[in-house]
Length: 273
Image (cartoon, rainbow, N blue to C red):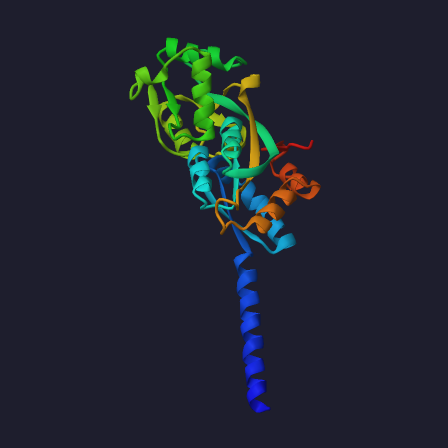
């Protein structure tokens, strides 16, 4: 009898350990996202709320949109949250991801030195503003990192019918860095740059930089969230990933996004509002 009791105890303990391990494997997910969302402080604001409600920790890998997509494509993240709709749609069409949903939006602005050597302050045509920056031989600092912001900037140069890299290293400087570092470079060089509104509002080292151009419909900046396809990568935590996406797009998650402000200024607007 004692033998069977010991065996039963061992089996029970083994089962409990297996359950705990399985549960532990689901207590965190990896989110590939952008430096703009990370640098703004949004994740620090909303992710603790999700964890408190779900018990699931979200571990963020914050890089440019292009790199975030590559991370997700390789199966090194469970969920992708980025801000370049064409790239997101290609990602889903190629079956790397499933169930894309709109989450939130803000806009881009062109910032520059208060002295404004290009004379673009108050303009609402971003492409025309870039043309004036080039005509004035003023310096423009680009992220140059395949991020969503960089992709948006390149599209604006196309709209302006200008090839900016002709002046690469002189009046067109590519940092290959995140938005914070790029803003610091622009500030140090009294240069212009493109930045998402959320990062701009949360950026502390503005020095003599100010918003020059805003309000162009082409500066709209939507964010989408996508579950990485578990059919391609069996280790993807699909159930936990879906819970996060469902929460993020629910009334609770959208309210959490809406409540993230600096003073009275929202950094992001939830899609459902």
